Image (cartoon, rainbow, N blue to C red; front, side, top):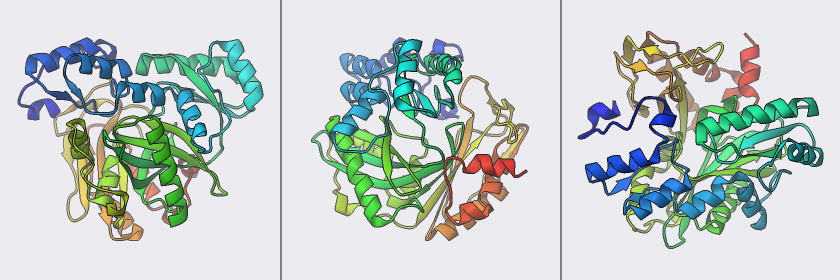
Length: 408
């Protein structure tokens, strides 16, 4: 769809990402031949690659995102943890540097304790992550996580962190301009996940009161300012059942779920990104930020809803919902062939209501109106989620979806 709607298109290579979207010379060449002034890196691939940001600068092309130095600092998840610690933001026990080898991993694991989680230093989106319950599982999990990280991000470095069972995952959207001015735009609750991949996001989080929101938002801004951050970013936290919060990582890019924040704040985050990259100031202060109503997003993936395996194929018929408070972001259309090479995200269904109850009611109606034929999708899972009593009561965590699916 993006090619069909573009004024001009440049072929950057074959479909596999390692031969196209991860070839930064081809991206730069396409910008140069088309006369582009700037590159928006999107959600993945080179979006958090500091070398790519440097090359853009060297070629006189604006990178619509943070500086290479900030990406490098916060993209190294172990360094990001050290930055948060230095700012007095709580972190879970973990390695302060990427793991060197298996012996190093074993030594660190003894210090951290089990269960622990292996995470890609350069990654996000659930790629390169493995939970390790016992010492016997460490070697195989380390190899698998490193290989997945290398394939997804071109960097096999990983680090270890204490695994917090069944937490909430809450993230804060921040904007920083080139003068060091920053605001947070409230939080998104991303707790409903499978294999560390988010399926449902909402704002505001049912778990936060105003005092906790203010404390976490200020912590997010301290982390961002300490890294010399510019542009849009997200500071992610884990929330334990007692209400304690812990810095997890910072995503140095716009995220898939940014429309949730746009719906409750009325701000266009991509427009803000472009303005900041062009050298303009924020134009707003923290007191200007108002959270109105409630928003939900369901990520509709081209996946088998039972086994959660990618389900590429041809979309034979498609109908998306509409109406008040409903937004759909998608590249799909009837006749589109979902390829096997990329993330399985097919559409983002976003709703807004004056209250959480109204937003959920709108999401139920919208999901029931979705028609995607020819391939399997996760719509049936979303329909179950928005009718589940625990979800309706706001009792969610990263273990919610696994429990729901076991109730079949």
